[in-house]
Length: 204
Image 1: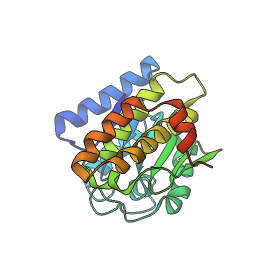
Image 2: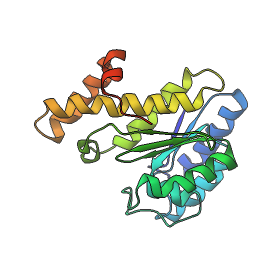
Image 3: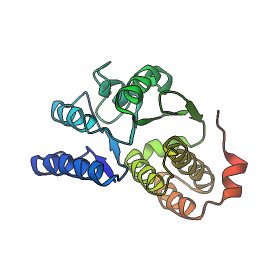
Image 4: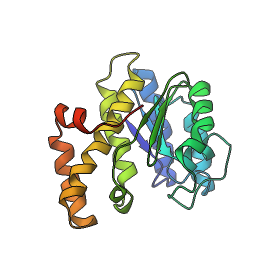
């Protein structure tokens, strides 16, 4: 399940909290995407309530993760003003406190469970020029967690990040701009093979 704070009207806020509680009761993994946390008070307060329900994974940009951990005030709306390495202390804090896997998006993505930290350096700048790119990555992350084995949450979140960012590269190579990239990226995401991933993946 994915909970995305992009449209937190009153009814949706109540539904998010109910859904997160139900997911925990059912043992269903869920992802928190703290869109624009820190810069918008309503979202920030809601995110704090959702954190208390211990999301399986948290996925955001560096500024959102820093703000979620209470170590900053957020970015410029939905855009980050920090880089992922700056957010590593915040990501570690969140992972240790809530038992979540934390994924920080950026030129090099960071994924940590508080003990082990992985880095993925794939992707293309065109991902930042398509509205909803981060939100879509949250959905892919939730899909990977849905089929992960117990104890495999870190690997699942890292794999989701890898597949998503690797798929962007051939799409960028074949496109003529952001519009054709968006369509091509969906096609590449659907057709990406294990061989493609092995050939292109840059990780640490």
